[in-house]
Image 1 (cartoon, one colour):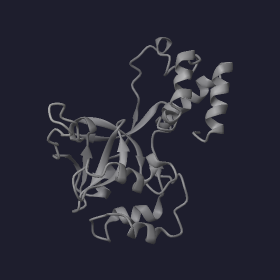
Image 2 (cartoon, rainbow, N blue to C red):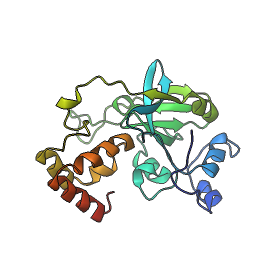
Image 3 (cartoon, rainbow, N blue to C red):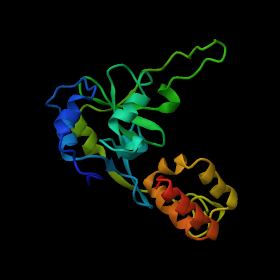
Image 4 (tube, rainbow, N blue to C red):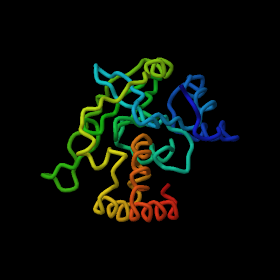
Length: 222
């Protein structure tokens, strides 16, 4: 099931030593980092790889590693979410379109839901925040237990693709959608891999789409 997107860095021990991990050095997560470097799950159009959290299936995106792409990189993600996840917790994976899995100091895996656990401004207080909910949901008692929970799940087809300009791979993007990719090119690099496959195919279907595709590649977003 697990396949590295990139080679494990030769200086992996040094890189791991620089991570702000508060877990035992013998933890199986450390062993995983030494064997796999960035594991991407959302690469199949019709399937997700999910974990069950309190009866809800959550689609996994990436088990983070060391990458030049910030959304795959352990250091970048943990720097971005510093003070937004509980102290001494460490983000190890992305899932469910904006959420994180975090490793606690005792090696348990918790679910950080951005709609529940993120910091939000309190509009009634100048430069203030709402009180943060740091009560994360427990996913697994260990990293190994988390890995064993992952299941391949067929994506339910609950929409009419003829009416969905973003998810039907057989019709081109409308001009306004293509314009948005030009205006916000970084958004394409954040698209889940299984959706990206569809988007690239859709761009190939029109002259303007092919121009946008060439520009995104030229600017290094693909």
